Length: 338
Image (cartoon, rainbow, N blue to C red; front, side):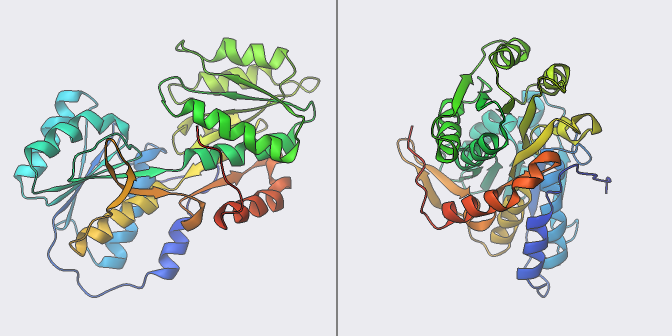
């Protein structure tokens, strides 16, 4: 298995799973397939996070390579669909796809095989009855990022830079603002959701306006990190809050000194759950939305499905983040709908 050296450890939920789930006797005969995105194991991103859950499931549920087959796409739409069809025809009763790149392929192939179960991790756009969407509460993550940004800001000006390819970016911006103002009601929040393929101009504009802490869900490329590093100076600092495991470049040592935290989605928990339910012949059938109906599970702070990992200067605010997380878990904070 590829070595994983995370700058911010995301294995906490794996430890919790290991402590709470006792190894069982040999599982009933199952055929489960994992369709990794480009790169597969060793990508230090979504695939590696899912692989952690797969490995723990193998250990706890006593599964072997005969029970779980792992495949990697080359990234083309044709290849994604071809691999899913191969797995379906090969008798795999549960097929788990990693990431939004599989959205079109899963939507199409799941209709061709209505008697099989499909799951897609980190995508909630497929309404087919035999597809489970395992998604993460990005608004809770943005709210926590807003809290961290507000308390860490010295200029009382913070920013949200959203990835325009995500339809949820406006809602995340609203949650980020709400979280920040819960700490500092008069703090200035600058929102920028650029339509270009580079965030550099937007970041520079915010920084010139006095923003000293930035949260971004930008995943297209590492230009986000490059821009923040270039603008960060001792006289006019700029700190970053990111998203893991999506922004794989945050694992680089280059982020040291500017990264104070990251909204962390525990894809390993979703992978483990999907496998566990498959071995029991069950599915995660919560209704996530209606019109259209989306089924699956939303991971939140409640089951440690998401969190805010702190690093660098951000570690000084661990008590506050823990306190706010507890309030969210207890339902004492209601994030406004958008």
